[in-house]
Image (cartoon, rainbow, N blue to C red; front, side):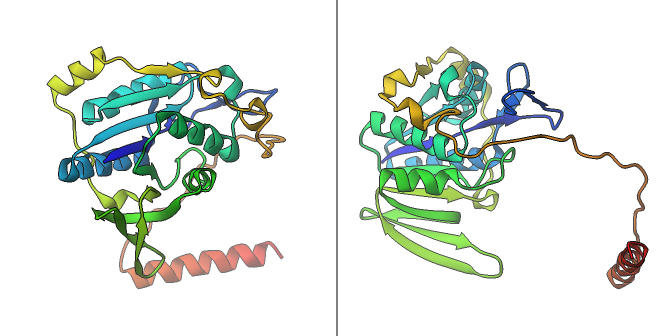
Length: 262
């Protein structure tokens, strides 16, 4: 199986800065980590490769420092890693991101399965995976808590609000996974050292023959008009005791707040 995993590097801290002109996050100089859900996607890909053979390629788009997270994926056991880093792609929203990732998948060629985390913790939209499937014109399954592959088909168990659903599709397909699907492995020292020496391909938008009007700020219909820092509040109260008593106390506080507001 040829499996592609879409990975995003996200800020390790909540103390992020915003460009005052473009309103985009300033990622340069901010320590990043693999988006946690994407780490589960990498692990799911490795388990499928171990069961069925094949190759796992991890792709990402972002600033040059995203290479660090790709090396972590290589240390986990991925076969190849590719980074799309181009200043013209800066400011891409989910629509522009799904376009660029789709162009990367097309350039890679034959692909049986694309795995993504269910969402990125810095955006929390959950839109890139479904958008990628739409761009490529292939089936999609979201919120997978388990995946099985057999005879050119993929069967996934999806976790919904209060029940599970089993869905089967023909490959190729895009699948987004939740954290409960697995426990990502910890790389051994030998693999970490090997990943440090590995060559990571760097692509630009020109390498993809990408339409510049569909990526970056130009390809992003989502526009951030203004950004306000969160209001910091002090104080608070820790509740203890039986759940029923804590629920009643919270309800009383909510009622008081409602009456105080008029």
